[in-house]
Image 1 (cartoon, rainbow, N blue to C red):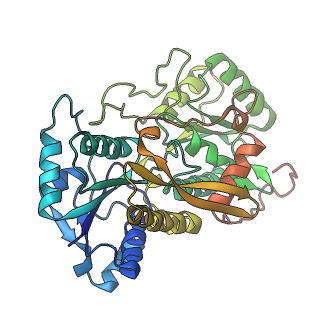
Image 2: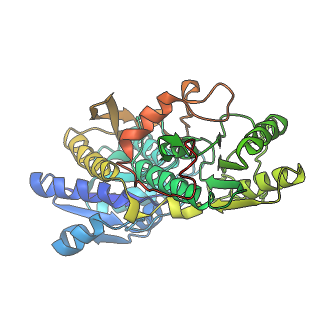
Length: 403
């Protein structure tokens, strides 16, 4: 008997379940594993032996699961201690693996989850526990994983953001003096999500006048100068800000700053948009400032999921099965981009050690010289990932060819 476990960890996405089913259905074709177990609530569920045998789930439920957002197996934010410090969880996990005859443990998640894959594979090598291999499957809307061109979940979040920016942009234009509209996206450390707002375009023109990224230290004086100029020109400014935007001292602009942390020790953010609103109002530019905080809506909006994203999440699950069949250990299923047009990727592997606890920032050539926008190269990177956005037409500003 040769079985496997697949589990999910960290924040959910619109397409995380597609990776589970890609793995599961690939195994149905190849019969490499006798049983595919789903670990409930990530590594915590595996420690408690809370498992579901996916082979016993009906075909109709499997199909429904494939098109369901959020982490359908449940998730956790449980970080394994280093085994040098405390190997209690490690011993318990290998007891579970032995009991259920687990040949491979698959973990779907971001850089903290791939840290789990790395630690378990290293612990197994150190203790000659060769019966079980460990393979990661990437996931995060933040798109901040090393070794992969883009992560499953990001394309759908980017599609939600760019569509929301387009539609709220039109909402913000209905008066003769429209004021300032601020949309806040997720992005604790990186600006990939905020940057994807560049895809929102009306009449071929980018909706966002300003995009603020964590990669660029926030300079209040320069920011206010730019806002004043744009506002004086057209009585309207549309701003997109990442929740992780920081000052030159490394402090979060967010009004909640370091008030709370998650179980991984990461700062819980939210409020950068309102902090920005206060700066604008206090500067006396205008009192008409509205803030939209997209928050968790970005993560699991399957009604706006990217078809490309869903397909790739599924394929990365399939690729993970291939890696298991090839006896790989301590690696992550990844994709690399071959070209933008035609858009093409190939599926391969990367060491979990190269991904664990590391962050992929937006490259400098994706950020405008003044730091308030993204470049054409960034647009070309984002564009193939989100599918075609809606097109709209308004007439209240039809006389103005600049809109």
